[in-house]
Image 1 (tube, one colour):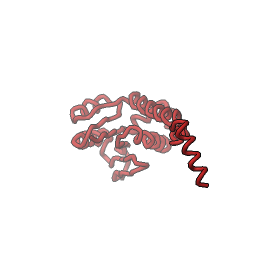
Image 2 (spheres, rainbow, N blue to C red):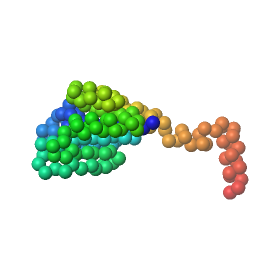
Image 3 (cartoon, rainbow, N blue to C red):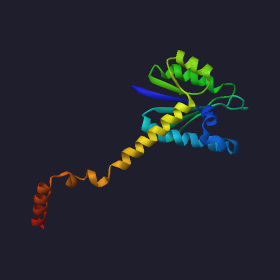
Image 4 (spheres, one colour):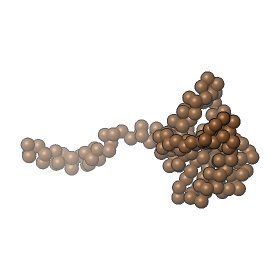
Length: 170
């Protein structure tokens, strides 16, 4: 069964301490950084990730969808809130699999519950992202590449006999 993670982009940017200074200097860079973090998280979690950014108050925006490093990034159209789009996505995607919605907006959390989705607070999402990254780093740093070589897993007696056979053919 598929798992989806729908993220209220600005909500996370303004909630995570990682973006504290960045959001004040360059909001576009903060958006890019969130997409990068989630693009790295997606293969670790196995979730299809959708990040929604609100363009509700922007003039003449038609809304757009981009796929960036496997993450679907959605900018709402003029007059549409991120909350409304997230609520609609929660209902649609819950028919296809399990949906998690990351937001701190309590009203939105209640609505997505009603649409069959689960909620994650920004803190819970940050914990999951950090834990997945840490687990991945541990998994790949514990195993030394040479440990997986066949010759290193053979009994000494078998390895010596194979080495003798190899040398005789030369």
